[in-house]
Length: 116
Image (cartoon, rainbow, N blue to C red):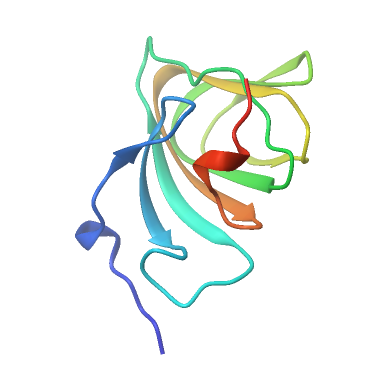
């Protein structure tokens, strides 16, 4: 059985500029097909617009407000919103209030699958 506590995970910066703490991924659990992380995007520091060739992503907004752009379509996001980001979709999230959200990637997140 694997149970990881969020507070024990060390934050790092992804290639797109967000700060994440891996909750479950290849680095801290016997994960094969997905990853789960908490992401923080502060006001004034949007992620860099990018896409993933392999990973499908889900974002689930926990705190804050902002806007999500996927392939040229922009929508406001707030707590309780679940966002689907298909593979090969250009995307960027911008915070009007610091955003904290869960990010699930399948296959698991890797720096090598981030393209600008």
